[in-house]
Image 1 (cartoon, one colour):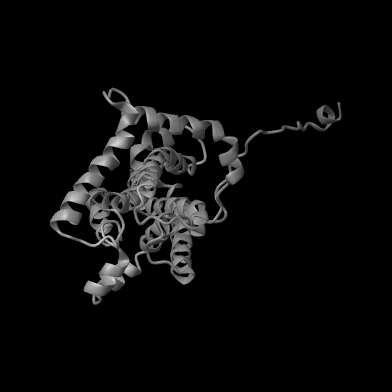
Image 2 (cartoon, helix red, strand yellow; image 1 turned 180 degrees about the horizontal axis):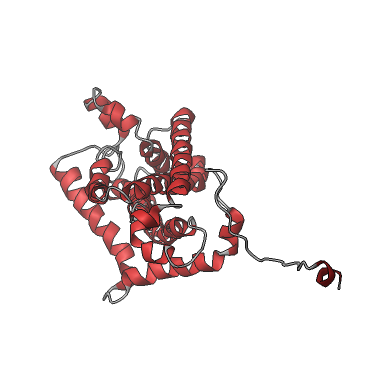
Length: 291
């Protein structure tokens, strides 16, 4: 009655949309509120990618297996590149498993604005949900490939190969988080730039393949430092190199590891992620007008 007398009505809103006041605002509460949408987008990515394929999710296994076989034949047998005493298939599988997750997060996130412009222009939801769904859906694929890597590791371990897992294996969750954050941050930066410069999408396609050769996927860091010391600094300061080397060191007992090396990769990853968040938040306000 008092509200009627004063001419005012009290409204309670479930959601209030406001402009960004801070470039570092993530609105994580809104992301949590839209967690059902996040789940649907993850399912969409998984189903749409393998829909109308004959082998379906088996491609999760086939792709790393064939890649490992080719790397073993070309780089291990023909080129004779050292694997520091590790079985060649296991050495390459470790690098491929870690690299594929990072590369998939980067490439798919890098076109998130362009690929979903029709959705962004019609309905409101926290824009961060879209790149997060890509990182999570890729995590499913990574999990399957990681299981394949573990099976191969157990096989060689039981056959008395030079495989020595150690306590640094406990860093695995941290390594996965670093790979996801690095791919997410770089992907958001590139996605924001592709709204104006479409050519960057083509650059990412083959650029990520070239970047792999500057990472210790097909050779150990020790070999690069020994044979090509004048160029090894490029590989050594690649922020993905400490992650892959630590991954190999923890699971296989062979690789280059020290805390400063991993700390450097963590610091660079944090900077990349923060830069990605700032640029993403800035561009999401106006990207519909430019895409």
